[in-house]
Length: 173
Image 1 (spheres, one colour):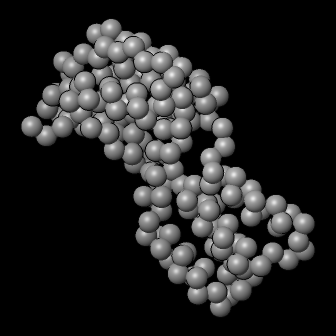
Image 2 (tube, rainbow, N blue to C red):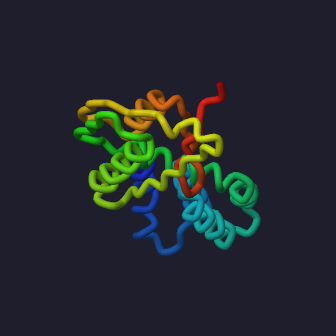
């Protein structure tokens, strides 16, 4: 399943394949689309190419600077979008621990995405507030974003998407 941002990126890249000299503007648009898709590495490459094509491109220079500041947030947004787009056909648990539920979800997401999405779940629970949580559910054809919402709701936890991990913490009481 391709995202709208990926299709838009392909539409920008297609003319680049046939053009002899891509313009700074084309590279700049490619960088914007990469940012929207949550890929700061591709965005950096595109903005750098835009500056090589036109060293006076203020838009590319500014965007490259902003990218340095926001790359972790962009990567986290990309992780959330990729994870959330995976549809889990069947997710059944009966009295599972939070860790067991997250492990099962991780396996399902990897399987359904054909190993393109590998969620790294980290449970940050220094006081042990989540250790006794029991998860019971029977879900069908649910996006992974919805499944993790139901899991964290039952455990009285919240989720945060970081650059390299999906972090689960207790809800403050």
